[in-house]
Image (cartoon, rainbow, N blue to C red; front, side, top):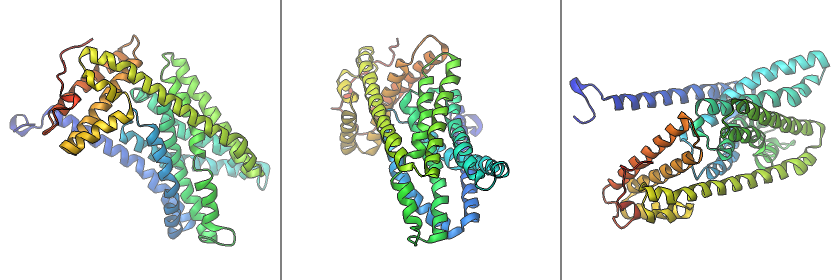
Length: 396
C-alpha cells in the first residue's frame, strides 16, 4: 500500500510529519493553558458573567487589529502556527508572568512609599519593565531558535503586534469585566461603554506600538552576523518599548494622557505606518529584482515574472485559476507564489555561511516541488503560465 513500508510500518516521511503535527499541537496546548488560567483568575476576581461580557467586548477591537497585521504580512505570510503562538504567548504567558511580578512590586511600593505608592511603582515602573520583557521574550526566542522565519523589520512588527494584541485582549477582558461588575454596560460612571471607548476605540494599538519597538530592533538584528549586535539591538528596542509604556501609564496616572496621546502616540503611530509601507515596497523590490534571474535559471516561466511582481497580479492569477479549475488548483498556485517569495527573500539574505546557503537551497527545492505539485493538479488550465516547461534539474 502506498505510504507504508514492510509489515505495515509507516514510512519515515509519514512518521516525521505525524511527529511534527503532534509537537505543533502540543505546543498550542501548552500556550493555551496559561491563557485559560488567566481567564479563570479574572473570573474569580470579577465573576463569570463579567468575564463573558468582557471577553465579548474585548474581541471587537482585536479583530481589526489582527486584520491589520495580517495585511502587513501579505507579501511573505508567516506560518499560521507561529502567528497563533505569538497571540497565545501574549494572551497567556505574558499576562500571568507580568501579573505575578506586578502584584509583588505593588505590595513592595505600598510598604516603602506608603498608601498609593504601590500603584505608582506598579504602573510606571514594574508594569512597563516586566510586561515588555515577557512580550519581547517571544521575539528574541524566534530570533535565536527560528531565525529563518525573520526576514526583517516587517516580520518583527507583525510578530510584536500579535504578541501585544494577545496581551491587550486578556487585559481588556479584565478591564471590561471589572467595569461591568461595578457599573454595568452604561452606568452612572459610564460602565463598559466608557472603558471600551478609551481602550477599544481610542487606543487599540497602544500595546502593539510599545512592543513594535522591540520588534523593529529584532528585525534589524536578524540581518546582522555579529552576535554582539544580536544582543544589543533587541535590548535597545526593549528600552524604547519600556520608555513609551512607562510614559503612557504615567500620563494616564497624572492626567496628561490627552497631551501625550496627541503629541507622541499619534505621530509615532503615523511613523510606524510609514515605516511599514516603506518596508513593504522594499520587499516588493527584492522580489521583482530576483524574478528575472529565476526565469533565466529556468525555475519559473518568463511569462510569470509580471504576474509574480505585484499583489494584484498574484491575486488575479490565483482567482482566475480558481474559477476555471477549482479551489485546489488555486491553492496550488498560491503555494507556488509563496515559494517564489521565500526563495527571493532567501537569496536577498545570502552571505558566506552554512545556514543561509542551506536555507537558500532548501527554498529552491521547495519552489521546484511546489511548481511540480501545481502542474499535477487535475484540470489545471493549460493556457496559464505555470503550464510552461521548467527545468528543475538546473541549479546555481
